[in-house]
Length: 235
Image (tube, rainbow, N blue to C red; front, side, top):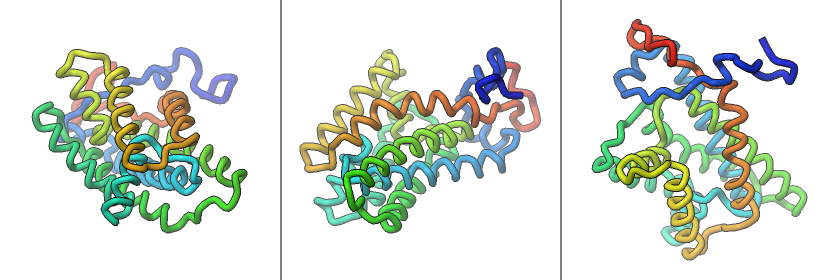
């Protein structure tokens, strides 16, 4: 049932549904696994394509893609290839942080990069400023929705999110400031290497969180059972 605004009614469990930190074994035994896998792949595909939209707008890429694009230009590779490479380098950093791999972790590392390259191949560069602005704003919106769809499948964090949570735990610091510091370091590094920093980068940084927060309760699949056993009322 929807509330007056067409969304989740106040007090609905979906509005307050939490994310569960499942091990790989528990993910494989979670209820509705085929649906979770399908939703994860839809989210990852949209996420990669939307990053390509930002780059093709010519108004700046997402913070990590500023670095990926700079490395791709210098090394003669594609942006997607550098996204995959950086993802697996970050997964090596997970080892001392003792982060747990999930189904979505490896899928994210590979398929987002593939989707970026597909998007870069399909999409031409924006022919005008108006088209560039529209492409950039649509890219940010699709990226936020896709991120929520992927996260809502509850099949594990991506390499960059795991780095954030792992450092936050090891350093005993909130993940928010840790994420900000990481993204600033990545953004400045990419910019110094000649990456595409621009208006789109700023809009992305400001708007992504609110879009995910708005969409996530509507697409999150609660984990009710693991290997046939109830996870608990909070799951």
